Image 1 (cartoon, helix red, strand yellow):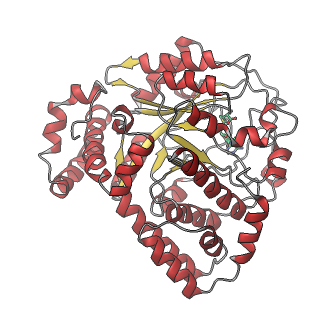
Image 2 (cartoon, rainbow, N blue to C red):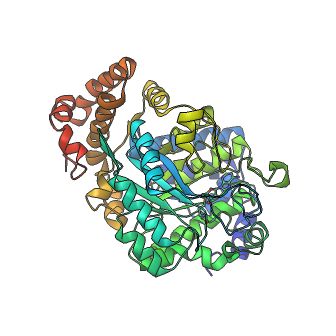
Image 3 (spheres, helix red, strand yellow):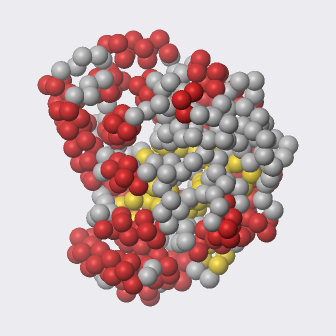
Length: 459
Ligand code: SAM
């Protein structure tokens, strides 16, 4: 077992009471994109003095800029089934919660996808509860086919990341064959006693089976995997080291670690109260978690959802977050219900209720470049091929123009006058920075090629 609990406790103990000069030299090393050792992480996470925090956030911001520039990738979740055989004590879908379960029909999936497309989305995370009978792998595969095949006038969903429960190599092969982007699975907690306590008497309760899911996914040929912790279940310091050990295990065994790390924080959900959970993470702790992940694994994307408020999202974008969801519903059929009746049906509560258009405008005003690019996956830049490009620093040359083109595409298709003016300004500023021809004309001239989803024009 690669999550050695005693080792994590010992490392945290050894990392106590680091002084500011130690913190400074750790941050200097991290600033050179050399990552962090376990002991360095333990030292950073346990020194929360204002001076250490200021230096930590500054370094995280510099690393973020160096690797990701000002780009932020946009996506939305799509829930297609809330059948669930598990009894996770934190989740609204837990089997003990009494509500009418359902999964979407083909027609309903198409309706949801069209609503997502009409918001401008190109990249989604497919979400289901775990139920091998009512929501088996064939249903999931068919849902993927249906989503990719659903078009509205401005094209279709170009990348489906999939968040399904831990399963077999054979099942992972089936979803891989459907052309998925990243396979996402949160460990929820790396702390085994907590894991077992929050997943009582259910399929998901097998800690080792869940922990080794990415090994089976990689064995099946999936080379982009996204990990995460549900912060609030166990001690966040333990979780941070658990995440790193997991990442290193995958790097050692398969040559590539996490493509992304998600940082969901526990929210109120049906059938649970937050005060049942003694390890809730405060806002300040959360910011430091994000910043330390950015330092420790500089080339791994960090994903933030609408579980966080607009204010928190704005702040941690500066410390390392590289992907955000926008306009999300966390219930099955939630987009349609939203459009028709304004009522929300959620797996848990979200905190940022703004529309994608509002979010995109604010990102632009804050100096970010929202990106709808999905070219890496479509051009086969996944797994270690992606990481090699990222580590060489060459990724900018690909991502920046593609981000600008897809932003321009969004503005043309979904923008109002205010957005169009904001995008125009960004394009003018950026064209000189990236030394390419006029992106604006290039985009308009090649809109069909961009939409057909087959190529990225700058590679
Ligand atoms: N059934 C899949 C599995 O077993 O991994 C997918 C899980 S669910 C659709 C997606 C994620 O939502 C979970 O992995 C969990 O981390 C998160 N989640 C569940 N309840 C939550 C809550 N109350 N607050 C925040 N996130 C929650």
